[in-house]
Amino acid sequence: MPIIGQISLNISFLIYLIWFMPQITLNFKRKNTEGLSLFMHGLLSIGYLSDLMYGFGRDMQWQYRTITLVGLFSLAIQHYQFFRYGLHNAKKKWTFAGLSILYSLLLCCVILNLQLYHSEQSFYDAAGMIANVCWLSYMLPQIIENYCSRSTTGLSMIFVLFAVFLNVCDLTSAWMLDWDYPSKIGPAVTLIGNLILIFQIVYYAEKDESMEQLAADR
Image 1 (cartoon, rainbow, N blue to C red):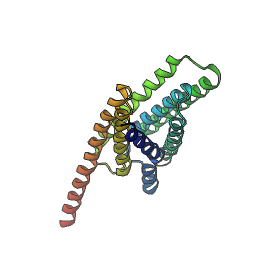
Image 2: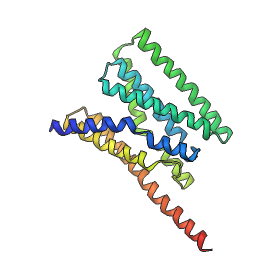
Image 3: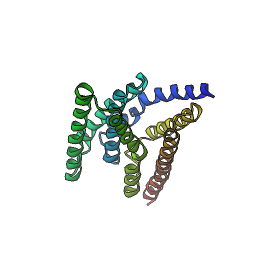
Image 4: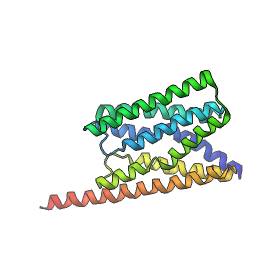
């Protein structure tokens, strides 16, 4: 049923454009990025930079390239928020510095390659594979961060819900439009990770409320 796949594709395009806004807004309101995984941010940034190389190198549709550019702009804002609000110890400062250098090198590589070198198709396909690895694994650092801190205070529920909805839309489009199997399997794997995040948000929120209630009763 191609019509269903096309509808879900259009819906996911619109959601991708605003996906990061709830998290950016939460960071701004809290004036803090504590609890938000810097490594999740790093994987997303590397994924989007790799997608930039792939999307423009393979001359993908304008929607694909627009999503990539908007995502990179959103992640640049969040990168500044980490710099402004989140560097509370030496480890985070060094990690942030290392990621910033890596992003700069990758961005220069993308610009030089697209403007001057124009590599073979296999090179851009490799960039696309790197992006896929990042999409499949980006939520793992946040899951670990939540487990270690026993809290999800720094993570936006709406951001994760958007991610779940995107997974469902991408999965629907992949099957209805008969995309390749990696496109069919990828959203399903990512959906599992995002559902774990939803579970953590609900579980640790109830735990925090219980602890606050006990403290109030004493």
